[in-house]
Image 1 (tube, rainbow, N blue to C red):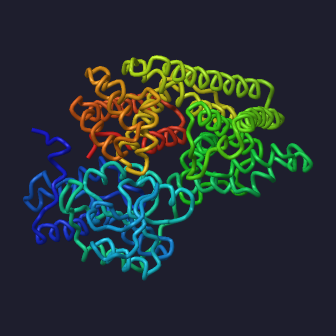
Image 2: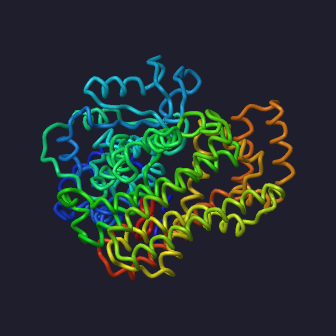
Length: 562
């Protein structure tokens, strides 16, 4: 019988057993692929062999895989300066009944009340120069690595959380170590503090040059530094245009925040086709970076994405974006709508400028691709807005169609434009189907984050009250819970129920309806379909790029998830 994932996430409770697995993992490294990040399939194979050699059960497989991965990365982690390392601690290590820390979107800001073990580990890490984040998720850590704030991560989490975060972090090629909590669950958790302290103090070792997607991602991030964007636009439009009020507002919004995923996809597709797999190896970015025309296309993609966010915020009546008031809250709806329209026009202007370096056919193909994506995005947003007239009536199939229209087209355009700029026409059916799977799964995970992150509870309840369709509202409707949910949201909106109480009650009803299990099943299904689609891609560099997108968007790689 093949163990299910839940049956292979047991952490040995006997310290001697844990130490025996760690020692065996260090001696087992000869079987790992040297110089190349081991994937889950490789770690699983090695982990099974390791446990068999110690006559230990498969229930410890997840723990063995963590130990093997740690051994692979210890030297690179030890060669990273302390100030460039990040310690990620889970909120469940804190004593919530006594914790006086301040909560924000990143997690808990520890104030040193000494009521739990978080304070001891935080002090030990910060004394060495570490950055420390206390949070339930890994999004903050991932953002800091992607945006250049940290080069290596030491994460403390339960096995379930490590499973979700491993694939994303591993795909970047950044050194990462993990310490599993001694048991799953969100209350009264414990960690091996001695092991955390040992890893915190690692020094020396042979540093590996960053490979994977991290150098290219940071290249993308650097491209969006305020002076870099202004320089590119000034060269196209002239210095006088850069001083006009609407351009200044557009520039400020472009620089305000965001992960830059879509322009990254454009650059990665171009690099993967032009330079093959070497584009994602240490030092693989070509001398001089990228040609101006591909940078302009990447910037155009981001301009149009940022325009859509302005319009979404107005249409959804959202008040906060990137931790600040939304543009329409700062400047009013008319100015915000005009700024969004301006960014759409700016995107097309940049495409026209980039087209001067392409042949006529290539420029026309790129323009056609971008306009299709623009229309599909508006169609998806329109379908969502029209559904608000009859909230809670959308089926799961209806919601998935809206997800696909809202999320997939921009990612598809980003990839197709990067490939076409490298003189390759992709199979339109393959790319459309691939990004439909990716977009729907990405949106499901994004919606689920709102249920898991207490800092997002008010926003979540506001969207539910407005009737914004999600896979979770569809599940409540299909389970016959619509009226009960409406009554609860009415109580919340009239301030008769606090955010946390309302969200926890709805979450319990969703669990009863099997909504979270269904969401997980759908994400697994979409990841499997996406992976089968890229198996036929001929360009190795492009295939690596698509593989990374599956990891990043869905947290999945080939084989059974551990």
